[in-house]
Image 1 (cartoon, rainbow, N blue to C red):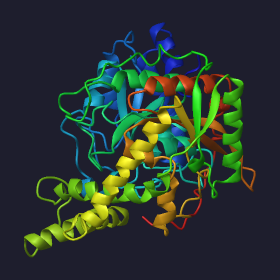
Image 2 (image 1 turned 180 degrees about the vertical axis):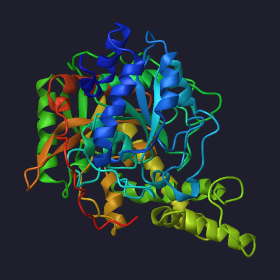
Image 3 (image 1 turned 45 degrees about the vertical axis):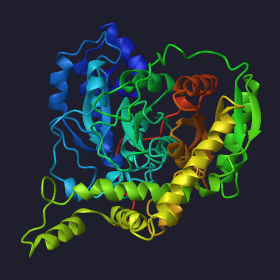
Length: 500
């Protein structure tokens, strides 16, 4: 096989060639390095890459392992020993991780090679990757548009064939939404299915790490590697992990798919709605039974999510005070000046906004009115899902109400940005699993075609089921085979009204 064609392969295809010894892990890295050199100036998905270290690991990797010799990109909120872990924030600009996160250790044990850290919204707070303090990542399908967020760098790298697969984190949709906008597969595992040890915490009761890949099978392969109990994370459940990849390929006869009426509302782009309607009809043709369901407390999910997530962020980010690591203000007048200026200089506007909001809702006199009430609504949302799953095997919906939007379009309107996660954040509140996969394209006014994502939600610890349902759809359609129209040659960066 021509080395230049290697980056277009998915993980399963690459692993087959590696096991047959038709290529070596080093040759794979060299091909990937060439692809990144060609495409990265247009997409800017990476914050750092260490091919020298990756080659050292490649030379001693066992290609017979489940992910043996497969390079994996890592969102820059996950610790990889010796590598930068900046969370795309000025406050951690020069920080390097001292240890591997549990999921990195598990990836290495499966033979995978972490090689680069991807761009993201600062501390995972955002839905467009425009909140990065370093650079803007661009959507490979249209470089004037966002790739989604907060795991936008990971999604864009996979879509642009500059990564075979990547890890992201999902606190309110930050894997699924960029997967939808960038035309790849993204899995949000159930809360407790994957260890959070070594992830820089945003909202501890909501965060989960998961894969972004080119196919559902690839996602299942990565899930096989990273899922499972971890004594270093007390929230990680001691549940047996099935072989997700081995369980793919079953037909959908007898499967009941719930269609929540609250997820098909006014405001959805009609091109997204058309693609979802066609996907629902396709599932019906595959033998699935489509059942209308209701999740009556969905309208309160956005407000509850931002109360809870911001409160937890306020507590978690208190550790970044310039005393132990990270940015430190120069020549402070006193301790309070040191804390204040360090955080003022180190945190970006969105992070400050959420810290202020979170501190407010936790403060005396407001705790019961806001945070405690949001937790009660969270219980109602969790109950809605439990009642729905008593009658259906999974829920089906759009992942995002709109295709990828232009850079800068929502930067001045936080509410519009928050609404980008209107169909995703309830799953985090409930702790259930979800997946986004391509289900069509929206043709824009200028003729550009942008991916549309289909979301499947399953009950807690039922990743096997949603992967099976997603795989059946994927393998009976062609959407996942389409690649962005990235061309070589001169590139002129589009202008944007976004400010760093």
